[in-house]
Image 1 (cartoon, chains in turn purple, green):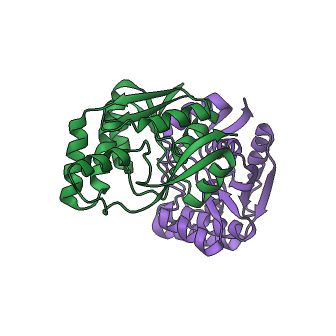
Image 2: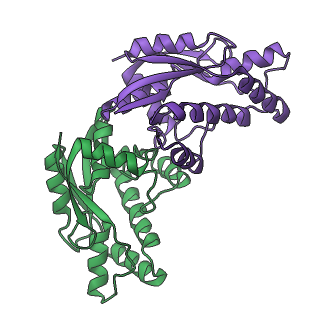
Image 3: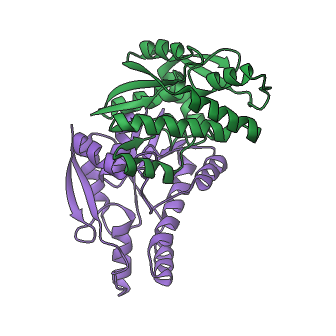
Length: 193
Length: 193
C-alpha cells in the first residue's frame, strides 16, 4: 500500500511519515512548490535524513497569487493558507489513492475539517489519513525529540518548505508588510533514530 | 515512556496499541469492568494474542447502573455510554500519566470532543492520545486486516469487552428491551502479524 505524505521537512510531517510506515505503508513524501522560491530544498534534505523517497510537485503560481490576494484582503493568513492547502490536496488526490498530512490536533492552519476531508475522499475516491489529528502538541514535541534530531528556526528567519515561505516572499515582492504572520518556531528534521 | 490504552480486544484499540508501540511507547492495555459480567476475558485473550501486558480495572457498579438509567430515560445509548467512558477516563487519569484510546475519526460513541480531551489533560496533568482520530473507517478496516487476524461477531450475539456487553446485561436484568442498540459488527483480535 502506497501513501503520499504532504511534506514540509518539519517534525510534524516527518512524524506522520514515520507513523504511516509503522502501519505498513510504503511512504512517499511530496512537497508542494509554486515556483516562487526553491524552498523545497529543505524538505529534500529532511527526506534524505529520514531515508524516504521525495518528490517536489510544482503547482500553478496563479493559485499562490490568489491566496496572497486573499491574505492581503483579510489582513490575516488563515483563509489564504487553507485555500492553498485545499488546492494542493485536491490536485494530489487526482494522481494518488492514499494521501496523508501532518496536521495535529492542536493546529489551526492549515486545517481541513472533517466534512472537507470526507468530501475529498468521496469526490476523488481516495483515503485521506491525518495520523496526528488525535495527538496534542506536547505529546508530539516529546515524540519527535525522541525520534528525530531537529533544528529549530524562527519562522521568517530562514526559508522552510511549508506554504509560508513562498507566501511571505510573494507578499514581500508586493511590498506588503509581513507583521500579520504570528511568530512561531519551525522545525527541520536532520536525522531519524 | 509508558502509555495505558483503554482496551476492548477489538480491532480499533488493538491498532491504537500497535501504532503507539511504533511511536516508541511501552504499551499497557487496560480493560474496564463493572462486575456485571466477566466479559473482560475476551480482551485478555486478545491482549495475549498481540503480546501486550493487560490489566482489568474494576469500577463501581453504581456508575454502570446510573449510565443504564440514563439510557432508559433517553431511549438511546449514546449519552449513557459517553458518561461511562468519561468516568473511566477520569479514573484512569488519576493513576497514569499518558492515556490513549482507540476512537476513530468516524466513530460516534464513545466520543470525547476536543474540549473534553483538553480539559482532562489540564485537570489531571496527563497526555491523552487518540491515534486513530484522523483515520477513516475504510482505512482502518484495511490496516487491521493486514495486521491482525480478526474474528467478527454481531454485537449482542456474543459478549465483548467494551462497555456495551455489561450495559446490555444490566438492562436485560431490569427487563428493558434492547432494540435501542443499533446492530453492528464487533471484532475480536486473534493474532498479530
